[in-house]
Length: 85
Image 1 (cartoon, rainbow, N blue to C red):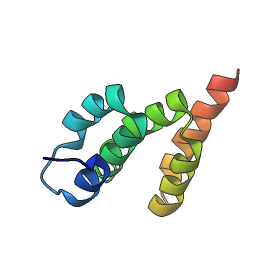
Image 2 (cartoon, rainbow, N blue to C red):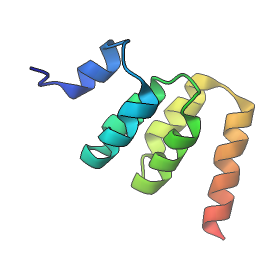
Image 3 (cartoon, helix red, strand yellow):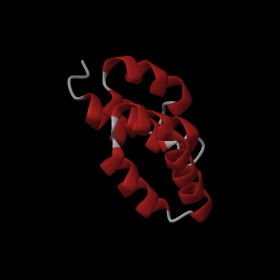
Image 4 (cartoon, helix red, strand yellow):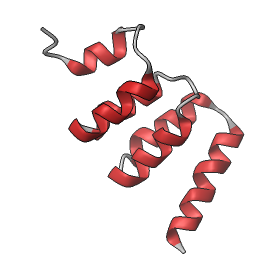
């Protein structure tokens, strides 16, 4: 039925990102990133966590540039500093 999960995540407006995201994490972290991204800010913590856990730094950088939220930038940079030390 759904043979293209990426298209489903991008085009379907009727799913809850906080519910579908954890399910996608076990299948494919990049799909979970897309699900959390669709949350428009309500899933930022989950999105940051999955990005750091699975090395999705390029996707995270694109998301940060798209959102243009200084508080979100600060959250990501603080997490990066604490993970280095």
